[in-house]
Length: 402
Image (cartoon, rainbow, N blue to C red; front, top):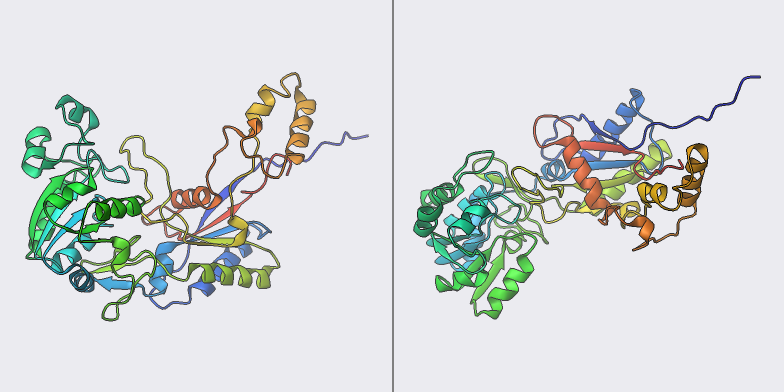
């Protein structure tokens, strides 16, 4: 009699980039996404199953929505809202793709810009100067405000770790090329800008509410953020009612692509269409920048205001997982082989619905599902020429018992 052997599933979570057609403005993205999934499944790459995850990059959704604006439309909004004279532009990130195009627009809407850069790095980790050099020179970045001349006499010209860009010079020349006067200072105290102007446009992303509050309390006459620029259409431009310019990217030398709108409706419609065509409940999300730190360049990504601006209900919440290492090293350290395997499976099957701070859950990642999955998608699709703006994930919600 042949011995019966257990069928063991050897594959866990799989993240796959799906190659899609080049999407242009006005294209029916919902149909393109669904057809791409169905064609990939028909090729034998995978089967569509309940609780699979389909993710769509924010960039391609915004493109299909024609959510674009020009530099001149940015300038017109800045001038209308901030007066067109001297504006303090503070805490921008160092990015040719994300911020330089916006800065050109700001310069078209002002007579003078006092650009205040945080140091040693910007909000997302791009460094202007090494922190050890700051210590060596006896500078306190929490209290000291430096002019450009003081900064460069202490530290020399800035140079990005990977791109070799000197963002200080680059940003100053961008402003001046628009016929706007430019002055650059360095500080981490938002109130320092008030020594130069009481009209401020704060460009930080995740700390913007605190920055606005501190400036208003310190007596600033007018404080806006990038989320207040192009939060409504200007001369027929695209816009984003919640995030304004936040999450925007350079499209051409004269245009930007804004963050997508109506994301919740889009993901629900895609989910519904897939259910109708496959009979399976697939979770759907829109993703932008992930949230992870590069150990060399020190950038931690997340230049978008959120990782995921839209997702279906099955992606709400945080993981509720036990740490296998903890179970093996503690509760079941006396077991081996099949006995250990069965004990671990039973423990997973019987775990409480919300583990919270339970010891068995310590060491798992306490982050929202959409942030974890969005980071996985961002790494899978990349930002270059892979041609995979859709990511299909299988097995994410499985565990050792499945």
